[in-house]
Amino acid sequence: QVQLVESGGGLVQPGGSLRLSCAVSGSRIHVGAMGWYRQVPGKQREYVAGITSGGTTNGADSKGRFTISRDNAKNTVYLQINDLRPEDTAVYYCSAGVDGDIYWGSGTQVTVSS
Image: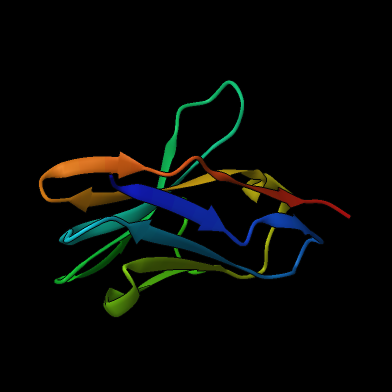
């Protein structure tokens, strides 16, 4: 059974930084592309960043301050967010392609407020 578990969210002041983590667990799995999305109530889920063996991409509204990375040995993907702004407040979800299927985590809340 494949599971994705996010961590690292929380309350942070504007200008602060956070590092989100997402660990993929399962037996004898092969993890392909991994990515981060975010969603606020009433809006569609928004693509933040993705990473494959070929490199990384960022969403249109998440360039510069958002950096995705991964540790293949740990099947873990990270999202470093710098200079956080109130508009970054959202639930952040990770996704992973595992053996041909797409899996999602349950999300981690990021709140940016003074």
